[in-house]
Structures are given as structure tokens and as C-alpha cells.
Length: 246
Image (cartoon, rainbow, N blue to C red):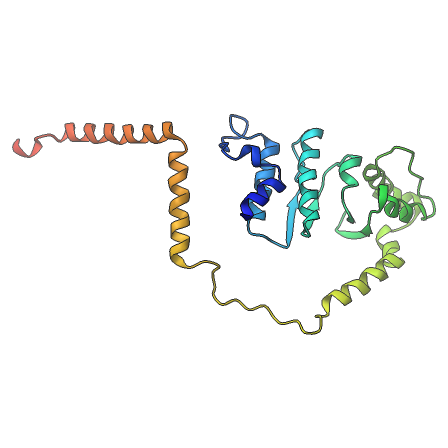
């Protein structure tokens, strides 16, 4: 089944029967919850996935596990667009392409990272006045340090303008034009119905989900039953034989 493939892809097979639980109380850890969230999206079998800082709130080990599963997702042929916050060297180099913007949302680099971020490093080091990266230094940290507003003022340049005058920018424009043009023989998408599944299939799926959400936690369900019986007895006692009294 496709669900089994997704669980194996995101290394969730060992958690097959685990309850999600409450954050910080019981159930899955933060890292496992993030992988589960990705798996829920993958079940729909999308061709492109957007992720907003999937490593935020995680330690180095947990972040590496999450990004490893993200990399596994990419290796299946899907595209993952991901924002990242303070990545380590290993996590940063797991990306194929980088879209770097400065304050204000202007692009200053859009292109491949290369092995050990060689393309990114070469692009900025060719600019006059930009300091060279030291051996073993994190390229993600270095690129942010050399492209700050203070650096622009000190060098008297605008990295956004430099990018728009670069060969990389022209290459990207040509690539966008090629991708915008439909391939010969392609047809517009057409769907036979508004929904992927008929009404009754959706109803049965919702009922099944609700059924399992109740019976996976017998203690909670038992408390609900006892509370209902207690309220019924209390109200029944209050109004017992009330109609025969004047």
C-alpha cells in the first residue's frame, strides 16, 4: 500500500501503533511529530511540497533526522520547497538549489549550491571586496554575514542589482521562459468530478476515523460513558415522581 511506502520513507514504521499524544506531555516527540506531519501531506501524493522551517525547535540530532527524511522525499522525484533557519553544514549541503533574499524580499542569489556549496561560494567570492570563506566555516553563516546591509554600505554595492546583472540571473530567465512554454502534445488538466472521492466514501472515511479516535483511548471513552450515566441519574433523581406532586 502507498501508506506503507510513505511510512517507510519517513522512518515511521516503528511508530505504527503509537498514539500522537500531547506535545511535551506524552506520545510522540517533537521530531517524530514533524515527520508525521510530512507523512500526512505525502499521503495525498503531491508533486511539490512546501515546508516552513521544518527544523525549528529541534536539537542538532533531531534536525538531522528530519532533514534526512526530507532528502528521502526528494529522492523519490518530488520537489520540496523549504525555508530553513540556522542550518548546520551537513543540513545546508543537503539542499540542491538556494533562493536567497535580502531584507525587503529582493533576490540576491538564485541557483545551485553545488558540492560543498562551491557554486554559492564562487559567486560571492568573485565580487570585489567580499571576504573569502575560511576553511571549515559554515557556508550558510558566511553568506549571511557577507550580504548584510552593513556590508553593502561598506562595499558601496547593492547585491540585488549585482544579481540582476549576472549571468546566473540571465540563465534563470531563460529557464523560466522554457518552463512556461507547454510541451508539444500536452493537454490541459481535466477532472471528471469536483471531488476525488464520492460522498458516501467520504462519509465512511470520516466515520471510521471518528470510531478509531474514540476506541484507541478506552479510558477516555469509559469516562465519557460514566459521566453520561451520572448526569442522567442526577437529572432523573431531581425530577423523579415530580408530576404526581402538587
